Image 1 (cartoon, rainbow, N blue to C red):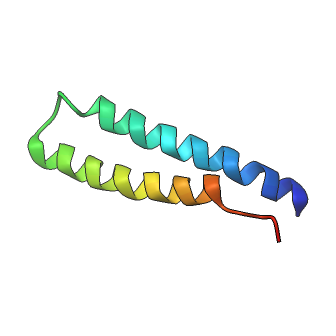
Image 2 (image 1 turned 120 degrees about the horizontal axis):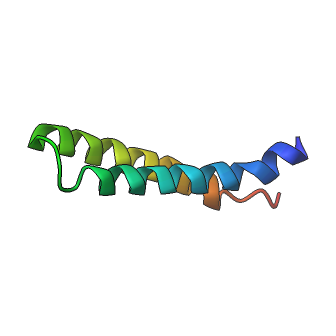
Length: 59
């Protein structure tokens, strides 16, 4: 279980980078409704990634 706890922050950073990349990718192209949908999903993924990255395992 210790190995899993060490990988969790890495997964969080990957989720944050994926959310930022998706938001950057659609920032200039595509219909407005699609951009808004991607932005909303990116915020949710960013929050999950932030929780995974900064979760405290120092019990």
